[in-house]
Image (cartoon, rainbow, N blue to C red; front, side, top):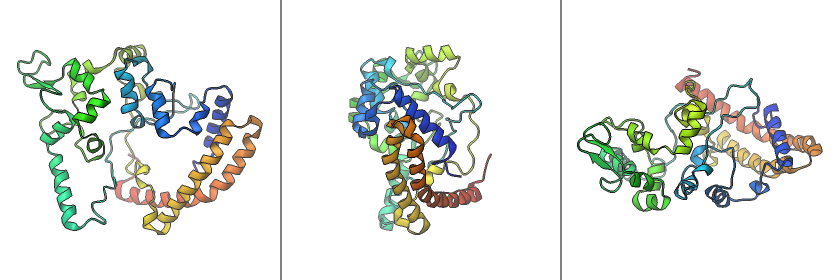
Length: 321
């Protein structure tokens, strides 16, 4: 079974061809680099796209909030081919393995130990608060009498402070953003019972919502975008997610072959997908056949490696829950 060339893939790209003919797909989608694409999002010029939230909900969308273009920000839609298909866009929290910090392979043991000790130190609550809450007085205040939050001693933000948290320029000056986004972090509740992110405190979450979002939720009878996509997503399978298993050419063997194959089919996709989507409808099947013929031997190697990884993960972590 090959998801790259199966009937669903063909159906998807044939639909995309139809959308392009109707003028719904920007031709620059195939020529813009990442910065150009993000600039369009930041200007509010992109109506919709098929990428994950973490790819654009940082600076590009924050720029829209800062500019007061609330109506140009985004909401997720669980789109399917037809109503017979149950969407599965939302998953549950999961451990993020194999982040590849490079401290265990080619780093001297003494340095690796010191780096790990530093990471452990940064996971202490006091340091997590500095990284994700900021500094008292600058980024939050303490509700000494409980009049702001209903809880004495609770942390809260003023509206000006909330606005700061959506300003890319302020975040860049005030926080170690690269470390905050990439380094290991606590998730959920801190040892004190507070949430790691101030945005998740009940009183902050309620006050931080934009009216445009609240109006949309009310119209659909939900209270968050997570609920909007799926109020109760199924349990993750033990082996999930397979994107943690991307092959590395450095490791050689089947994994190295899979990494080479992945580079190969990405080259094929860059050449043929624009042709399929922007070409004449009557040429679609011919282009698809050429694409499939070139892709199949490459994805066969890649899928063999991924199946090996899947079998291992099922053995170690379990299968369906």
